[in-house]
Length: 297
Image 1 (cartoon, helix red, strand yellow):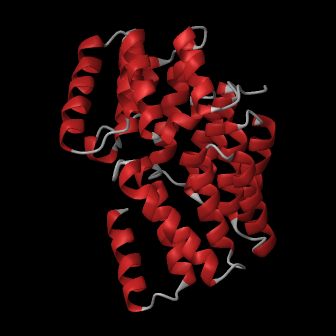
Image 2 (cartoon, helix red, strand yellow):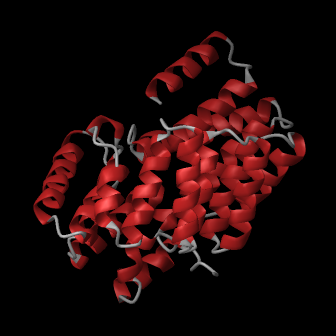
């Protein structure tokens, strides 16, 4: 991601009137925290400025509306505004699968999971071989607690592309939610270098839930040490803590995620990892702070 951002910045330095480059830069910057490349505080202002610059240069550019919609979804809590941008992007470029894909996440945040599933399936119709889209059908079904279907979709994505690490992670998450811990451990990629902080946290959650406490605690220590050197999204540490049944620490880190605009905190109501916390007053306060809607299933 860092290399891609550098290339886009180089292109803009050569020609600052390239609206598509500004739009792609905005999207890349706003998504960088998802991969653990940057803290939201490091990129959000630049991402917003790049998206606004793209719109100013070319208001008919669908990519620019997608970029603004991403920012609205993951950082502003402005999901209706995000949906307006994604709709505009689709009107301007009906074949843009990304507009449908990111529309999916705004709908998840609004608790409209049936509509989210329809949106991600529409994205798949536009780009049937895109690994990320094929995987995200599984993700939405996972949020809907339709675990058998989620696992089937993740396996289907892996049949299409056995190198699809995202699908392996998602299958591991789904198997963990089903209590199939041994199967989940076998699915998660063994190479630490392939795991973002969030993925590492989810593996730690699975290990903790499955009774492998020493291994989960080792991941917890590793994430905390990494966070002292570079950015690690707080939700990752919260996930391991939840797997270890350390409810207070899990909530501490989720509250930190809200303060930091953690990338994944917008899914706090939908994500099954947090199901055991839902009845707690601190968790309910956290939901109010994020303004996300409980899923309507």
